[in-house]
Structures are given as C-alpha cells and as structure tokens.
Length: 343
Image (cartoon, rainbow, N blue to C red; front, side, top):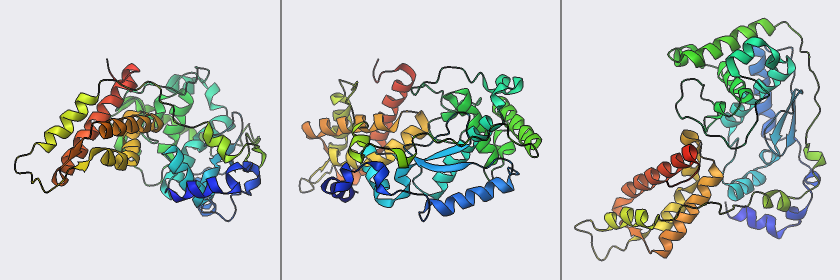
C-alpha cells in the first residue's frame, strides 16, 4: 500500500484539482454494483423512487433530495489504495460493503422523498429529525433498541440514521429480520413500521424528486493534497501512563521459562503497526470508537513500545495479539463512554 501514496506525491495528480481527475461512475467497478443495487430496489418493490448516483467526497444524501453521493476514491483502485493508506479506513472496501452503504443511503432517500419524518408515527418510533446532529456520539453497544447494520452502532447517532439503518436491515436480501430481531421489542417495532410503510408506499409517487447535487466531483476545486491535508491525524488527547501497561504485556510474555537466548525477541512496535488496519475496523464495529482515533492511539502505543524497547517471543505472538486487542478495546470503550481514555 505504500507505493501508491508515493506515486501520487511524485506526480502532478497530487496537486491537480479533483474535478480535473476525470472521475466518473461509468466504466468503473461501481457501475455493475449500482446495477445490482437497482435490481435489489426492484425486487423490494421500490419502483416509484429513482435515486440519482454521483461521486462526491463522502457517502450521503443531501436533505430533501433523492441523490446518493458516493465517495470519489471508490471510482479508481489507486485512489482507494491511497485513501486506505492515508485515512486507514475505507467505507466501501468491497462489493458487499458498498451495497451495505447504498442500502443505508437509500433509507435517507425514502425518508426525504416521502417526508416520512413529518409523520406522527415516524416521530414516535425514531424521534424528531430536528434533534441536533453531532458527528461525535456515544453509543450504547449491544442496545436492543436499535438494529445493527453499519459499524459503530450507527443507528444510535440520530433519528434520521436510526430510520436509515432500520430501512437497510429491512431491505437486505435474504436477511430474516423477523427472526433476528424478534426478541428485541423496540427494534422489532421499528422494523415492523418500516415494512408496513414500504408496503403502503409501493404504489405512491414521491412528493420530493429533487436530485440537486452537493459537492459533485466535477465541481471540486481543491486537490488530493488539500483534501487529505484536512484529514491528517491530530495527536489530540493521548492517554498518559500507558508505559506500565505495555511493560506488563510484553515483559510478562518475554519472561517465559525455557526461552532460548538464541531466539531474539520480535519488536512489539512492529506487531502493533501490523495490527493497525484490523484493529481499527473491528474496534469501530464493536465499540463505536472512530477508526481515525484508534489509529492515533495505536501509533502512540507503537512509538512508546519502540522507545521502551519492548518485544515478545515469536511463539507467543497469539498471546501478544490478544493482550493488545484487550488493552486497546478497553481504552476505546472508556473513550466512548466517558470521553477520555483513562479516568
């Protein structure tokens, strides 16, 4: 993955306005996925609302439109690799994941197209759409009041996202939502409302059909350098006092009886860096701790492990991975629930 960013830095593409990169949906891996998604819509009985797809900076649906924005970096493999290297987390890393995001965004399209958010029962089930929308939110993992679709317990972010996630679960082909959520009364009631509503809307034309685009890729004046410059990791609040935890993990592993002096310890810092992509994704999925925060945390731990010269025997790598995963998960949960890594 390191070759792509270097190539972009050394080329004119890095400083070229994104609008001049010639990015389109046609002829890309996205085109057959969108065709598959349109077929999903047809099979779900959604034929009166026709979403418009376009490339932008991130996934989204502008309010009061039926236009679905798809991240521009998904249109080219080299841009996807660049994004993965610089940001560490790709929302739509393969076909199944892209379809997952499309189902969620279609939930917003249906909500806006029929102005469901104005209906009394919608408000009763999900809450008021006028509630403040915060990028930072503190979910309650495994809450039975919400469905699970996108990682990070995303339904808990806002009523609009709660509906979109509920819709996505309802729409997912082959998913037995009645069986999966039958024991979750609140989430099940939302799914039942969604199913009943979609049946009622099957033959109704939408009241909103605007497909006005927000930050279409053809209009983005800034460059990749400027775009990713806004996403550069900021150290933020790093947890002090973790040296002892790192020593506890690796010095305990390294003190195993019978360890040969001829078998040098493997650098702990290298292991932490190697685990970064997988830990970022899984910790976000199960705790709601944002991937970019986890990356900063992991790189801090890797730097400290290197400075402390921590290592582990090669035959204890599984134990090292388990201990590190437990440590980082515990820190992430603290941050999600309390807003800080340590008390």
